Length: 299
Image (cartoon, rainbow, N blue to C red; front, side):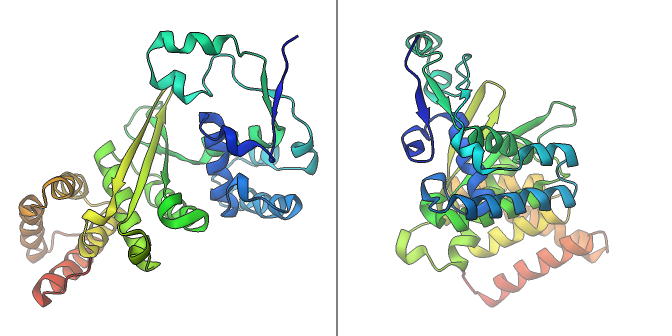
């Protein structure tokens, strides 16, 4: 019988490159504002984590029975009876590389198991860190903003709670998700006055759909504050201009040319003059135009 490597709190840091444990770590950050490697008091962590789960149930983001099944108990950290997936779904390297690269990992089946608590955290991440990218029933993907390097654990908790609050009940394409992640990253870094420390607002947008995943570098520092705020407010307003604005801002991030964005601004100004903008759209436009008219550069 092969030897089992037990993945617990004391050694989980070695295995966070595995997709399943990466998700468990994100769930810990989202719920408690700390990474698994930072848990010093298990009982305190359980209290904070369970409080978050109960809040999600109360807000009807989790079904009552589902939430109950995800609550942590001290024994969940003591028991280590969950094997890593034999289909290799836990192993990022096997998913990202050529198919035959996974062959050596097949010999590892049954060798690794993890604490039961991590399995509950993975399920929480899958249940809550999802966004809708189309109109079909299966058009949901897993998405999270990994800003641990730029914002730390607490900041990453806040940005993801905000990100998912904004995208909930909305349909956003991949460009919109990227620009939203970049906008929020820039705003959070600026709010925390961290640009002097880190130099720029850099993060990663992690997305997974079935067997496939992507981790895309997000350069929020390429967006001035006024553009970031403008886009976030358009999304919140369910603006019909949000998709075009995302495309124009992606062009700006890559080239520094705002011409396409200001085509949208002109169209919105014309619509506002004809009283055909929603109140949220009009307010976002007004704030942007005030910045431009005043020549105030917030970056």
